[in-house]
Length: 326
Ligand SMILES: NC(=O)c1ccc[n+]([C@@H]2O[C@H](COP(=O)([O-])OP(=O)(O)OC[C@H]3O[C@@H](n4cnc5c(N)ncnc54)[C@H](O)[C@@H]3O)[C@@H](O)[C@H]2O)c1
Image 1: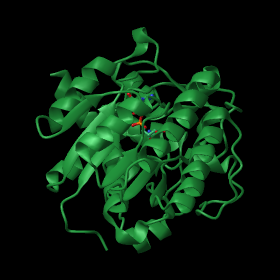
Image 2: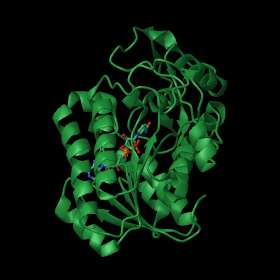
Image 3: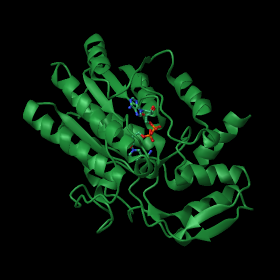
């Protein structure tokens, strides 16, 4: 059951790709939203469309959302923000969101992801009004899937820095939360795609290359399977999880719930860009072998229902890019 009462919700990392969508949805539902963000971009400047899309994200929810510039590792600033705004719910997405970047700058990934979460827990522990902490984990906590669809009981066995930090944060949040009575909800998204993503995930690279008439590189012949999730669906999942009383102290996979290969993605893009060319390269062995996640728990407890198939989501994504290119 979701609460009807209007909530004050602080979104850490709320200026990001997923966070800004969550912010917009919550504002549209009449909740009061505060975004706390350091406006970090982890992609090389010459490849990044960060500023262009950041402006679109902020414009989409302004002037309804209060924006605070701050680092999650700064517990003085965080505690001040909590005391000033007294949020009922905190949604925490403020981390290095990329596996390849986390492996490359692993010290920074440990610092932001793990120390940032510790600083947050300390700040929440020092006040008595936060009712729930919702954390954006990742399907990377599972490591190589032993079976698919992987449910929340699948063993957690991360194989890289990113997955390791995500699992560490889950455990910190669970352990401290249980001991000190800080209720939490952990969400494990996967392969999110759609408008305003600038983090050069495979979906963005493929769509951008299709627009630029560039070849698409298919690692491992395109057999890699991912549970591609449209950004509106994941945002909807976060909103339901944050507001649902039954989501308290639970972990949820929130994705589309379907494994689709990179080759599938290319075939969909070819229906929009018929001349698209591909090149096959060896598979990237540093990434866990994944597939579909089992989302039946989120469907049953939260009433979560993803709306966008990969075909529909890619169509929306392409239409959005065309609309902002005009
Ligand atoms: N996009 C995906 O496919 C995906 C999949 C699984 C999990 N996630 C998780 O969801 C979250 C959001 O991902 P996203 O794709 O929206 O990434 P994003 O980079 O667009 O958003 C992250 C936001 O956090 C902010 N941030 C980072 N470090 C910060 C710090 N030290 N202090 C304050 N703010 C900071 C950034 O400025 C950015 O606005 C991340 O935690 C990510 O690991 C994303």
